[in-house]
Image (cartoon, rainbow, N blue to C red):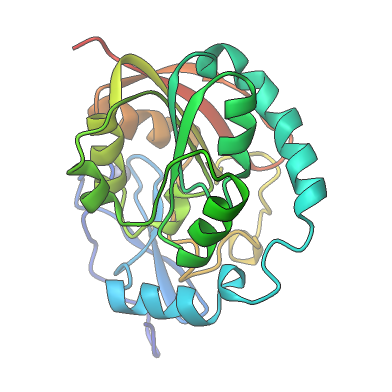
Length: 251
Ligand SMILES: [Zn+2]
């Protein structure tokens, strides 16, 4: 939290680990720091688990009663979106990490996948279990999930990475659950995209404590490489968002 003068002390970058990240700006009373070496932008300090949990239980739309009001149009869009992953999911073991109401799991299964989902939101998982009853859904955090020792050919994770307080737990989970030569698909806000506002603090995607960290293409590839992945395909977006496939190296 910033009151008065901005914090002056540089801090360690969670991506490249140089100790040169410095204060960039404040938004919604959170301070954002940027690393001059790799360009990573992140809330510093990351809020603690209790703050994040309280936020999702009270303020976040997923916790409200009118949950998934437009599920039929959402389902149609999801079916359409799933088609571009056909070759990665057909006859494969697939996980949607951050699956919400299970729409993508349902769509992947229609394409011949053996898909399951994990989400931290109890409301989302209750909805998913009701609407996609034949699939398996896990409602737990990533550390707990990792202990199941499950592995997958394809992990799909859309709009999760920006929500987690630091990249390491998320990345360690991907490294543990993705089989050698398997694929990970990531979508997340892209702070390096040419359509991000020049006045960065005005960018709507910067909304702590909901979104806590912002990658550009360079530092996204950097952290995936550190965890044993190589960039496979950059599905470029007209909106300021990453849409990237990574492949796990064969050890
Ligand atoms: Zn850095």
